[in-house]
Image 1 (spheres, protein in one colour):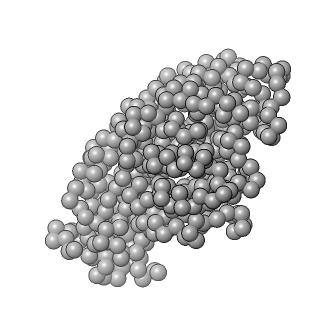
Image 2: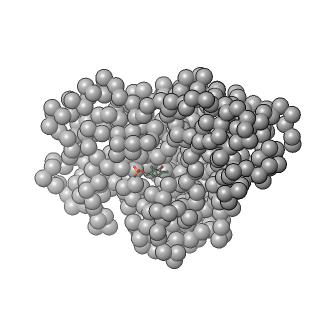
Image 3: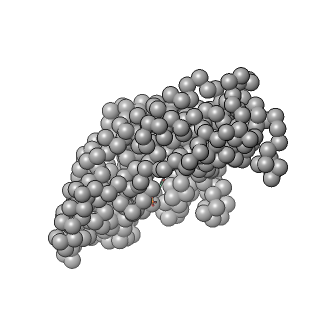
Length: 420
Ligand SMILES: *Cc1c(COP(=O)(O)O)cnc(C)c1O
């Protein structure tokens, strides 16, 4: 358990790994090609209403992910709502969502008047646990929303097989997984619908924006009507050719051509960006080789191209398991590199204000999401993964040093423990 090579941690007066703050690579990207595309949209005066920029981007993005249809929207929350609406999810239905995700995944279910049922995650991927999912299915369950979280993918093979057996719709929440491929084909194209966000912090970012992709033409047409006040994709603005389906109360959830232009530019560099991120993860992992206190969130089991929203470090091995989260956080900060807190279970999130009788927690608790997924997990945002090699090695060394020095964190009271 004791690591003889452990150095004195900075929290205990040792020399900090980082003397001068590291500089995060800038985000989102700004390119000359992007500027030209934006100017073109501006001059075209076609800024919304299924603009050419929107059509081009939606088709290219869907194609890139192995889907036939793309429906571009205002953000990655209304995309989820539209997907649920297109699937006919309504009052009284139950929809299974993982306990660990951004609240939007569950809020979209509330917007439909349906009941989110929170299900635990797997300890290695932190994504929806297939067994727990199957156990949570009731007579009222109509759909499941697996989330490809941080730097992993939910087990699509297992989840799709269970969903098929129980006749459930599958909506993949791919807000963290632009460009990710499961067994060679894009995420989002495996379920009935794939929903993506392009909000400022995501791996493709246009400030705001979102898209649903699907290989089901009818679902795609329903999502299009839902987000475009009932218009069909081929309708001329102001001249509806048909009345929308009677079970759809439609909205204006349209996205802007400006956003589509920015995103089209980023789509062209997406594979190269993910390759660079993969290199970043390898360099950090290299520094963690042989360090037993910490592990990196496992990639998707059949990921052939892994996407990243965050890189998640999990301090749950025996040597560090009893060191309180706040002490690890303080030790990392003292070495010069503070890290973010993960989401935590949605039903504990400050922004989640839904009454307790409007949702369900399968089995009464989600111990993995609440434990490993919250108390033991630290994340860094994806732009860091494109940093230069020296920066990446330094980040890896900070994590390794704290994990190796766990003994010191247990042995002596620190400022952080005194505060508690
Ligand atoms: C960001 C995010 C969303 C919502 O996207 P917005 O564009 O911010 O509305 C949905 N699900 C997950 C997992 C997210 O991270």
